[in-house]
Image (cartoon, rainbow, N blue to C red; front, side, top):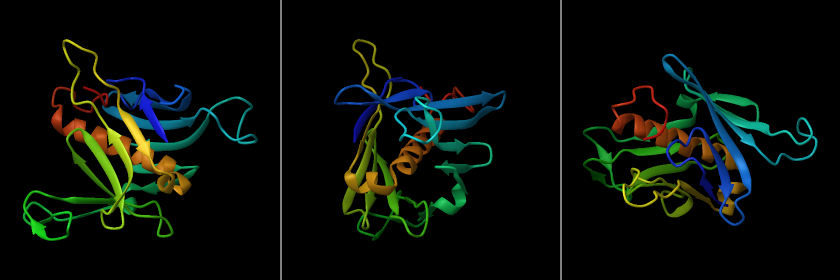
Length: 197
């Protein structure tokens, strides 16, 4: 799957469209309250027949920002159960597993029966890998900031058939979650923010 987010500045309120024919695959919608984000839902714009109202989008996933949980196909789990990190400010690891400075490894897994994804961010791109970083199963390319003299590029997501088999919705939510958290840390002008520059 290769798709782009049609709202270049706000990935948590955007349609996710196929690169091939620009058909809308998913829609991300976020509810805000006075203190910030409450819930981001992921709607499948092309649900399977018999899964909800005829022709209506179906909610397939959600990020609950306040209680720090994810929902995938109606099942809710806390983020603390889904992710783990290795390394810290003093002990960090390189991709080869050797100790280094400045590298924390992030891992996400929906359940014990599913694959564990390692997420890393470099050069405006998130990568999801399996098998200790040997196989890339997903990429999420995010433009750094809007440009003055030319159009900025939209966020683009690439998922391999390996990721699509069971974890498509989960991996989409993880990419969105990690990018919003990264933006929160780097963009101090919008505390609790909109998820965009």
